[in-house]
Length: 137
Image 1: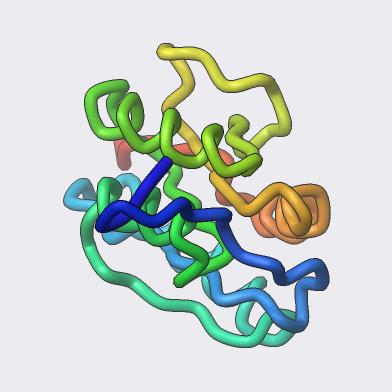
Image 2 (image 1 turned 180 degrees about the horizontal axis):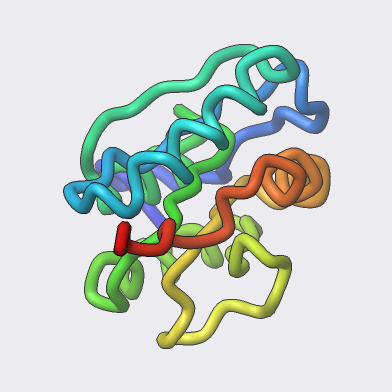
């Protein structure tokens, strides 16, 4: 992958304490709780958590090394496809928030530089943010 004719390599952070992690800014009320639980779990253990509001931007910034990782509990395939290619091109990793392999059907996503993926997954899995909350009855 290239940016302005120069190859990009992704971020070099290899510990959670160095990681700048982006969280999804969900439009659905069912996803607000899971996103905020993930943010609250990550804030004490990483360098910073940010919300920029664009899945495409988050994936591109992982590929450029501007952020370390991005998670969101409910995305559509069209929000992820191109970004997944960028992240993969620089040796990053993409999975479901439950740790499953990414497929086009995966909705709850974690993308990372690859070096911090496992430790971020562990934090998120302990935070009950693996997918949308159930609708109130």
